[in-house]
Length: 193
Image (cartoon, rainbow, N blue to C red; front, side, top):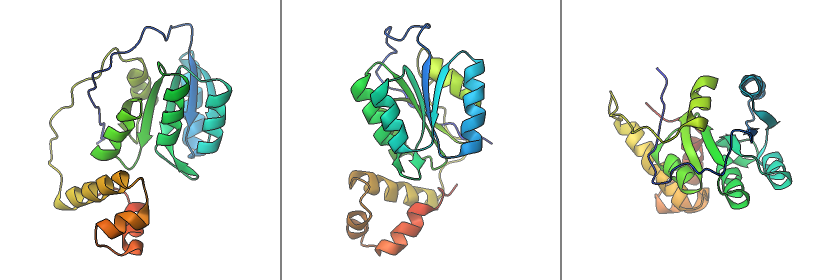
């Protein structure tokens, strides 16, 4: 079953993005997924710039800030939140969607605070992503069928402290009274169910 996190925010879509401006930046280091998503969005009328790193994403935004963006959260050279922040700085009305296989509440909230319009957990298909990009407003989150396990609650807490420490592993480990290597192993794993 696909996990789809949607957050409600007070911001309504702006009228500044017109249907004639369908420039789209996709940043994902999963090259087969990037290629498929690029083709799918081009068939929906977008003019796509596809890159596979934070550095290339930032460079593309600085050249020509797109009206839309689909950005993976964890990339080989950094965090997709840095790309969303830059996009919002250079083009505040742009709509950015964060995709991640490491979904948790803290990073979803952080993504929205930094300017993401929506947050989708992988695997998300092109139809879901397109719907999120073009949504008039966010859907209200539904109650989960299964509540979080104790392992998931612990993982969420660690992720929250990690984000509050500016993604600094050593500081996070100190605050959690945990060995740094243990914390690194936990951060490298997918979220428990």
